[in-house]
Image (cartoon, rainbow, N blue to C red):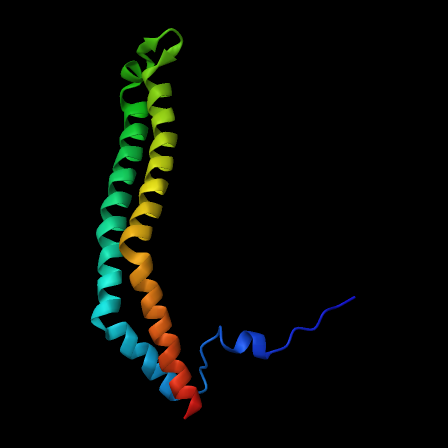
Length: 129
């Protein structure tokens, strides 16, 4: 059995490209100080975090190839420096994911949601003209 969904259900979720004034609304929002602030907060977290993680990953790879003696050094029993650093990569990934979600929740989500509501109100006003 196939189900037919009404087109009206999707109309509000997709910006109308046919109406040139709707495009102007989105450009106006993009230029707004509120939008720029949300983007600035995003960049201030993501760029340094991504750079730090990539440097940590590259340090692990370089150490594994350039200093095999250091990486083979035992830490406790059969566990060596390479194993500890490899597990540290997993731990760092989970911590970075948690930090990103927390940062988004505390610093960006509310402002982005307000922008979204404002944009929807503005586009509704354009559509009613």
